Length: 260
Image 1: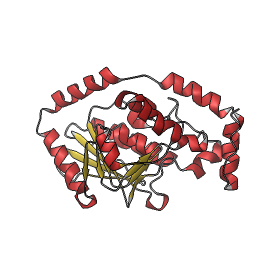
Image 2: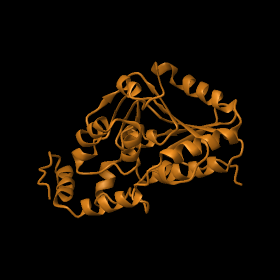
Image 3: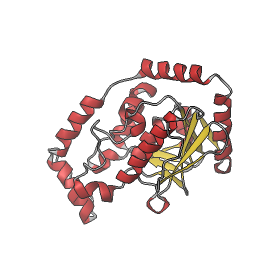
Image 4: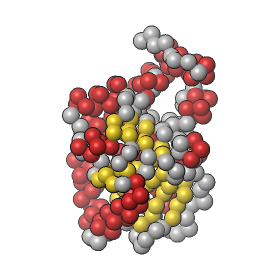
């Protein structure tokens, strides 16, 4: 078992209190948008956390004033939008890699697109009161392939899930709390303390029992959308609308959707 922390550039890793690791998405000049390097580093950190027997809880947050703005579209569209899609048909290591530790998303700022999908795969979401969330992929001719469809299908009324997925407009933190997507809202200055306090409450309990309960809860609500998501993505990438989205992005104009 390797106890040495991963050497990463875009994910900052620290241990603020015993049994807790904090991972901070660190691309503040790019609104913490994820690229291939950040996703690879997040996978490394996840695997490392799983190997450490003394780690019970992981806090995921962002640097600066934004949690994560989603995919770095400039980089993603360089190769036709395929660079951030892994062999599972998505990008999100929290969705696809096995994990037993409890994850807390501490939203210090807005979480859009894949950034929200990272948060939704965590076991708890604590957010600053000014946070907004959105899944705007349809505005770019894309699909959310990081677990959001399955998460929203099991956690929200279908009409609200459709609103988020098919319209893609931002939702404020108060509504997200009322709908049960968020566990807790706090003042931005209290976010770190709130996340650490929740971690301590969790860590006072028997870790194997906590992990087992959480695993059974996930299993009871799981919906395997990997194959269908991959098939939908393949069909989408062969469409004229998808090519139009790439062209419109490069020309800095609104896309003209034709539905084919």
